Length: 306
Image 1 (tube, one colour):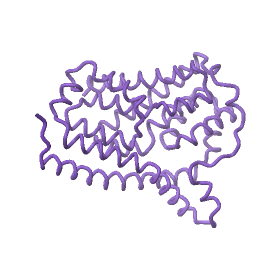
Image 2 (tube, helix red, strand yellow; image 1 turned 60 degrees about the vertical axis):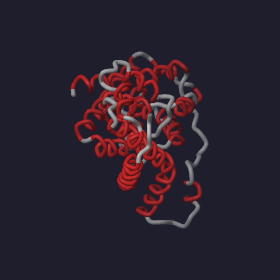
Image 3 (cartoon, one colour; image 1 turned 45 degrees about the vertical axis):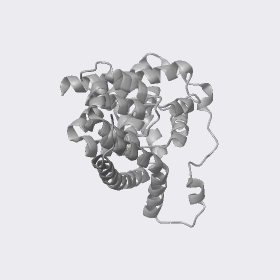
């Protein structure tokens, strides 16, 4: 019979306090540095770079996606901006795949939580598959599955509280970046705390034997199940990484952890709904196949190599 002990409660509280402090500082620091970077690389400049017709555009698109963590309400207008700027379809898709998977917040959390080796592996897989998928979809002619309405310029809109901020008195560039960083942090704070709390409870209370029997390396279905669950299970990277760390500490294979992270960070039902304003169903299906294939492939490859 499962019994909650004082040691379990203390382990949970200690893990929560440690993760909350560490990840809060990390999130604020990385977000501010990204804000400084974006100050010198505005969206118009990104569109100009991605409009190039050489093969380097795919790599550039992946790298730009890795340094531009857009919120969901700004991603769709940005992608439409790429279309209107006549950026290549393939480079646009690389950006779409890479941006949610490789933003600096995820990479920073990955490095702190799982170490450099796992982080490098994750980065290489996400970047490589994003580039290959974007190139392949363009060569297969999937551009025809972009809706005509996506080329129509949208009305200017604000994301979150930026409207109110714009009406305030002029501020220094650095203060604006900090205000934006703090606003973003407040938006993700419920997800961050929720993920840390859930992860801490799993770490403190979940029996190791249960996790080991369900999602250990000995279970051949652990990786595909984790990947499939990750897509509809909309968990932000700020939450899924501490959650995954807790699962790994309880015996979940790192291959399954990798699949869960890629599936949940790379796609979600909310994102799919938003993408339907740009893509037809065939392109939506291709998008999901790429993310699911990447998640499952990365999980099995990690277990094979390491």
